[in-house]
Image (cartoon, rainbow, N blue to C red; front, side, top):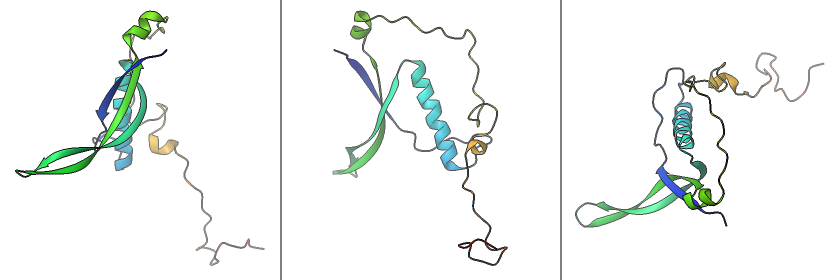
Length: 133
């Protein structure tokens, strides 16, 4: 039977400013990528995200329920690794720093996305519903 150990960490609230990333969604995605890669280097596999309630104090005697966004990670437990040793994967001797703001290292993230293509209708003066003859 497989057994795992789990780790729950709070999801980032907002992304940090990074040169080349202008939109808040791009900054947040970059922040998530850093977090996921850092934990993956430690052997943690991203499992899922959950929004979980917890009670917090409000004022002197009151409490409120807030939602916390948590990222759940798992990795094989020490007992499982002892029973089923695996050959470690060879790693590069030199770690390269990732190029910030690029998906493949060659193009910025925003240029690697496909944008929808729309027909120009205002220039023709038509609605765009019927083809021109």
